[in-house]
Length: 81
Image 1 (spheres, one colour):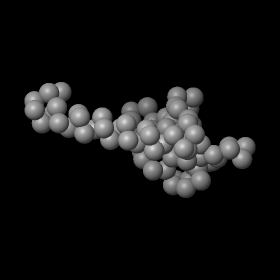
Image 2: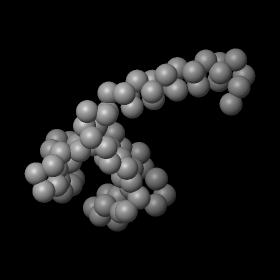
Image 3: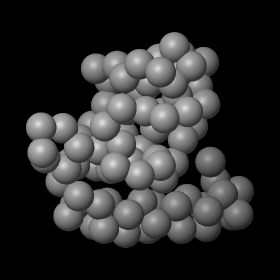
Image 4: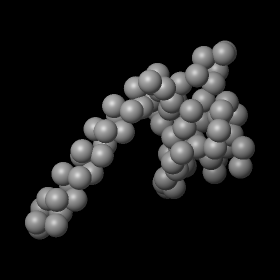
């Protein structure tokens, strides 16, 4: 499904009971940004629930998420939650 404003296909989606969480690069009024947003109505309508950031910030967020995932995987393998 094509979604308005995306400059390319989204890089990540997560199906939720209340819609889809979608992450990707979007453009609005000639400005590009990266967003993670909840889309309702089977992913057809963006909601007000989301976060936008400059595209340049995605690299540092990705490193932080990787560090978190690595630490979480280590604690899970040791019996943590």
